Every structure is written in structure tokens, then in C-alpha cells.
Length: 222
Length: 207
Image (cartoon, rainbow over all chains, first blue to last red):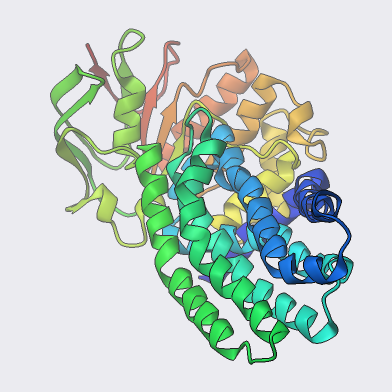
């Protein structure tokens, strides 16, 4: 049962390695957006520090959003998505595998590079640790929810903009909780409540969204 | 091969507002080939997509044995293989990788030697290590055919398999189709080219 899923994961990772520019543009976007903020609002370290959680989270979810369009569109265009529907495994699991690969390629690099940008915005080590943990739990949620939007806009013209309109409102809860976790540490309280809720949200998304995405793919390929 | 019949009952399909066909039925037994003919736009591809469970018919049902094709145990893909207009190949991967991955996705354990032998029989020896984007249209089509022929499925659904193929490869494909029928497999095919196939062949004219 897991061999086909593993084959799919390996295929997606191999393809990403052969076209590294796709993953690099997402990280690049994240870095550039965060780097623009100090230029726009001035170099006051305390002010930047208070803005940092929100800035980093908004930049991260925009970066993930940017990468979503490619999640299914390449497979859709060359016909492999159609063949995936004929693979004798539950489509929900195949979709989940693709989302996991997508997260490894786009979400995980954002988590790994975030401490560097957090330093630039003057966050302290314990705040940086919380930020990384929140992003580690939060970016999979972004990929999971975003996959529904990516599936629903398959084959539509201007799909990218439509994904943003469909999905960005749904990103509000992880944004509030993720940025809130870092804020809480900043103000001397514990981030545990925020992180627990974020974790609960991830578990829920993990179980619910792959099936919704699979149904959307089926409908769009009908 | 499972000795199950493949049946279409009262199928109807429409595209936009236009009715493509209605009350279409046929029964295909193991070892039989069904050739679907008709002019452009009469719904051949729509029919094949319905038969392979990718699209829903407007009315009617497709059965694999006694089960509707969309609710077969293990998924539609466990009983049939489908080759559409698109070759479904990853351009950044080699022919060999494409076929091996498709085999593993289908739940098999494809051997490298079998894949290379199949590629060679389709005249692709020496091209197996090249990313697919460097191959010509006809060569890509051959890789897609090799992938399909290596998957052990009882029913093969082929949409214009001869398109872009040269005469020698058409003969190889003909041999593969006849071998599949001899193993009591089933085939549904659309084509504009008349290729004689030895075996139990039926015709269905649309439109």
C-alpha cells in the first residue's frame, strides 16, 4: 500500500530537484518581502520587533500561496493527473502525498530560513524558537488548505489570482494563531495555547482537506 | 485475467447543451476488441473517458462484471489501463524513469530489464536515458504505449493509439494488441486508421 505513495513522493521530489528554480523562487520571494519592510517603515529596532511576527507570517503565507498554482497544474497539463486518478490507491492518500511533497519543497525551506529573517527584524532567541515551531506546525496547514484552492482552479485562466481570493480568507486562523504565539512570548506569557490550537488545526486539516481536494480534482477532470 | 464482462448500459453523454449519443450499449467479453469509429466531434473521446470512469455519463452506467466501474474494489485503475490524447509523461524524466514510476504507482514491481526490452521492441533502444522532452512526438507516444503495455490490466482503453506512429511501430503495436486478446484481455480502441487485427473484433459506429 505504501510503495505507490512512496513512488509518488520520490517522483515529485526528483522533479523538484531537476527544476530547483521553482522552489528557490518561493524562498526568494519570502526573503525579499520581509527585507522590504525595514526599508518601508524605517530602521527603529523596537518598532520592527513589534511588527516582526505579523510580517513574517504574512510573507510566509503569501510565499506558499505563490507556489500553490504549481501543485497540480503541471500534472494536469501533461495528463499525469488523469493517470493518477486511475492508480488503484485512494485518491485522498495520493493527494496527501503530493501535498507532503509540496510542503517539503516549499514550506520546510521557509521554516529553515525564518531565523535569519527574524534576526534581521530584531527578534530574541526564545522568540525565534517559537516562530520556527509555529511555522513548522503552521506551514503544513497552509499547504493542506491551499491544495483545495489549487484543485478547484485547475485549468481555469487566471487561476493564480482566483486561488488567492478563495484561500487567503481561510488562512486567517493560522495567521492569527501563528503570529499570536510569537506575540505571546514577546509579552512574557506562554505560547502554549496558541501552539496547541495551531496543532489541533493541523490535525483537522490533515484528515479533512485531502478528501475535499481529491473530490475537487475529480470534478475538475470530469 | 479476470473473466469478467465489460458492459455499457443505456449510456448517454452531452457536451455543452448538445447530445453526443444516447441509449448506447455493448457487452465486451474476455478476448474481444471493440473498435469505435465516427467522424470528428461525435463523442469518441467522451465515450472512452466515461468507459474508463474518468467522466460521469449523463445517463446509464458502465459495469465491470456486476459492479459499476466507478466503485470497483481497489479502484477503477485496478482493472483497466487508459491512454488518452495526452501521453502523461514527465518531460524532465527519462523514458525509463517514467515507466518505472508508473509501474510502481500501479502497485507493481517493474524490472529494469523488462522496461528496456519493451522500449527496444518499440524501437526506442538508445533513447531510454534521455529526458522525454528531447524526444519527438512519435517517440513520446511510443513511451506512453510501452508504459501502458507493461501494466497488467484486463482491459485496455486506447484513444487514437496509432496517431504519430510510423509503420513498423504500428505493426509492433498490432502484435501487442493481438497478444493481449489471446491472453483473454479486452481492448476498446478508437482510430481513424484501418489496421487489421486478428481476433474477435467488433465495431461501434457513433453519430
